[in-house]
Image 1 (cartoon, rainbow, N blue to C red):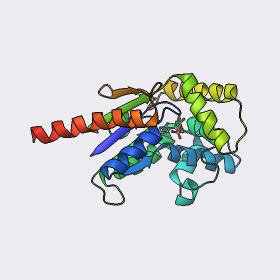
Image 2: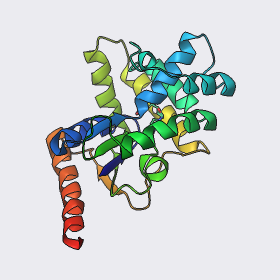
Image 3: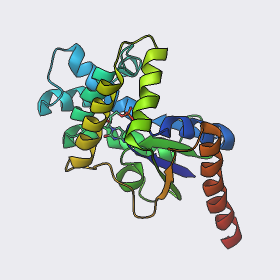
Image 4: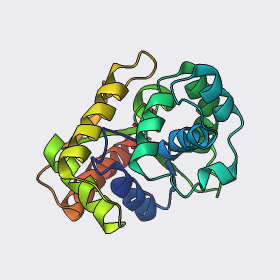
Length: 217
Ligand code: DC
């Protein structure tokens, strides 16, 4: 079983993915952390995240310790991740790992939840469950702003909103695997939902698909 969750910055994908994985006993892969690790590695090397050769080399040599970089969740690394993610060689280098994770979760679980930008369209186009999670820009920026302040980072709401719009625009405009809903994705707008309500809505969609599967067997 594969649950593919896509959507723009700070739409609530990660929280939903983690909650669904815990509920169904599936493995969870935050694919954004792979692109963040590449972005962080390039910045650490003093390189330009938009440099194809440098970013592709960083992606091809990614290690567990790169995935544990302390700056992974910061805004500059998010922007760098969005830049390296537009480079086809970077995406190609990360594709196999994501597909293998989905088909054979590392802990032997009966399924996997992957979240990102192209899971339903490119990484797992045959996933039985696809969710495209969105929320209004200002609401997503407010959530991200609060997250940054809670972590002790300094930021202004206006800057967070501008960064979020810039990153979404970059992710939607790229030629390779742009951010967009798969044709068969279920749209879930979390603007007016708290976490519990969003989880309930997602669980309803997943259960519906699981039940349909068992009836037709
Ligand atoms: O989900 P996130 O904000 O941590 O992702 C960081 C960046 O990585 C995002 O702006 C675009 C890129 N990304 C991608 O292109 N494809 C994915 N499947 C996941 C993330």
